[in-house]
Amino acid sequence: MLTITTRRLLASSSSASSLTSSPFHQIKAFISLLHTHNSATEVNEAVSSFNKLLRTRTRPSVIEFNKLLSALVKMKQFQTVISLSKQMELVRIKPNIYTCNILINCFCHLERVDLGFSVLSKIYKLGFQPSIVTFSTLINGFCRDGKIGHAVDLFDKIEAMGHQPNVITYSTIVNGLCKIGNMHVAVCLLKRMVEKGCEPDVVTYSAIIDGLCKCNQVKEAFELFKEIKSREVLPNVITYNSLIHGLCYSSKWKEASALFEEMLVKNIVPDVVSYSILVDELCKGGMIMKAQSMVSKMIQTGVEPNVITYTSLIDGYGLHGQMHLAIKVFDVMKRKGCNPNVRTYNTLINWYGKKKLIYEAKQLLYEMSSRDLVPNQYTYNSIIYGLCHARRPWEALEFLKDSCASGYLPDVVTYSALLHGFCKNGHLDIAFSLFHEMEVRKLKPNAVTYTILIQGMCKAGRFKDVKKLLSRFFADGLQPTIYTYSIIIDGLSKKGFLDEAYQIFRNMENNLFSPNNCCYNVIIHGFLRRKDLAMAAKLIHEMRDKGFCADNTTFALVAENKDIVELL
Image (tube, one colour):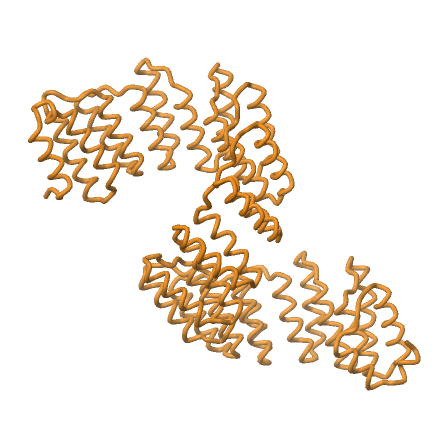
């Protein structure tokens, strides 16, 4: 059944002259329709009418069919285009080089570059010569698939064949190299491009600036930014967004803010990405009021916040412990038709877990399922962490079993949370059994996992187990952290093994670790408790010489042992 829009198009076509009711004009009408509508109904109707046109005696030329195929490509109807091109061949409508290029583009978008090369063979068989557009499309296909090596090889081959790459060809491969972080080759290609007389455009430069920023080479990105200005290439919003994001990632908020203001001065209109980057940085920095103000500003300028903007705000409120405001933002985004994604739910579930609000976290998990969103490891781990944090490790273990039955595969983070929960509540044997379960699942414990178990054993005075764990720690190719050492030193000294604690403290440097502020305070606490004031004073002097300072516990213990003041 025809839609109202299509009926109007057909009606206007039939009421006009006989010329305007020709297949040529009907295709023109459908192209116009496809540019303004993108519903499945409209596409299906256009395809149906396209098939009818194929059966008419007087068919439009291949040029008109190419226009329709191009319109469908813009709507990302790649499979449909391939199907229609096959129908064209069946009725012997001979494709031209443009039809072939359209097909190659569709195959590349569908991650079938191999079939794109089949079309390339067909081009030669038909007696056509592939253009630089043909090769650029194939290079783009390789880049989309992450096969940058293949793209570079093809690039070199087409140059050897005498084809001159254009700015699109260069930009495509430069962008691909930047995405995999191969900035050296990307910059070399940029220089080669200039030497060959192909002037880079803002797309080429923006790709390299973005790549440099993502590789934390913000200084180099700014140097290139200055260079493009001197070449009179005008940076666009994408260029600025990359630089702002790089500055924010490097915790340079003032510079990022100044660059944002520069955009406004130069009449480069910030988009939702520009605002979202700044909102995220403000929220992470705890500047929630400024983030709110930024969101209000973007709405006033006609830029609607997206799921990333809202999720950043939710995270910011969670960081401040304002869960009621986080939920308010969550409700607002749903009301405005901005659908929360997995990251949005994970952010809320994470903060609910940290606030021990397990019921609310689980409700969100169920809501995700109702919205056909698939929870990931972060989702489940946040709930398990929350249950353990709320001293409900048995419930966390039961939740894990239920989740595994539904297909969830726990990771090292899952087990580390459970180990922490059981150790904190004194269930060390259960913790050890979970540790062995990790081995059965072939999950390799990391430094955090070992440190959690070592801390539990130290508190229980089970130093034989600590020694065994340390041996395994090294056997697994891992290095204990300074935090691990401070836990062992503290545990030994509190249980009366101060000499052993001091020996480990001194041996830290042999293991390429220099004791930090925490380690010094912990060992000093031990000597002060044992009333060995001379050794405590010696260590306090040593700590000061290294630029460290006493903590509150050290001050309190010194106050209890007033005789040490003379030694200091």
